[in-house]
Image (cartoon, rainbow, N blue to C red; front, side, top):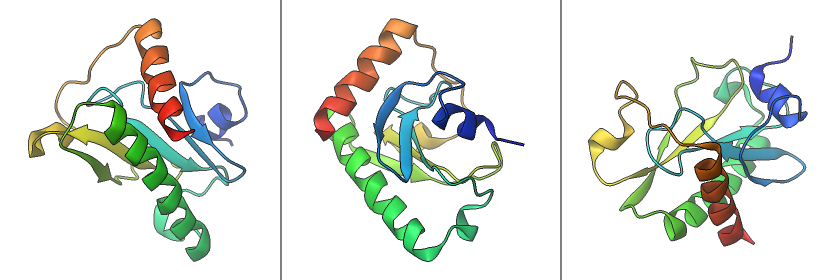
Length: 131
């Protein structure tokens, strides 16, 4: 059965796309810890990040770096934090989270709420910084 992320890639579920290529897809987390919180996923559905083929995993990090640099350019933050939990959705994914201190990447804290218009503006701004 396809994961929610596979359904997003297939266009069955809408997302706020940041960037994609033939192997990876980056989109805004709809339950973000910070403005610009982005998920990077491989288009090949693999449950556990460390089951991803070595070459694909390396390329996924390079893809994530490109997205993180765009987040860093467009969102006011000290760094872009990287987190891999792997428990929420059975599809390998990397969280890219703009942070100013350690608490900013704490997943137990309340999530932010944005309107559709705000999500669209954030995704367009980050996406434009990639191209």
